[in-house]
Length: 130
Image 1: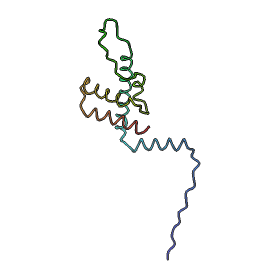
Image 2: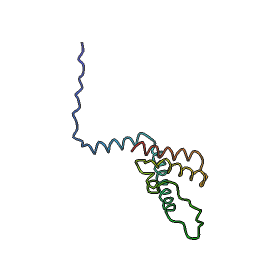
Image 3: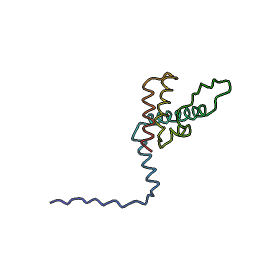
């Protein structure tokens, strides 16, 4: 009978843990989704965070004296928690922040349902990766 080739077991390399983690993140981001999808998701997340910070600032500012006392456009949640709704790790107000942002995009900016789907997918990807 013929000889069988034995493969040598590869010895553990001297690569340190942080380098391996960085390589894993790079490889995952390169191969999990297309580069354009990652860029679009990043844009949606950044725009959402900017919108939320501006909205929270507006909602937390007391109404001007000329405004009617019955006019109150503050959301019925704790502003501080809502302000952290788009953090990397979601909190209990993240769904509210996301639905408000999607409503803003679709109603106020008159974007189509595909934009809502993209925004939802962007935040889902971010929170799943946390």
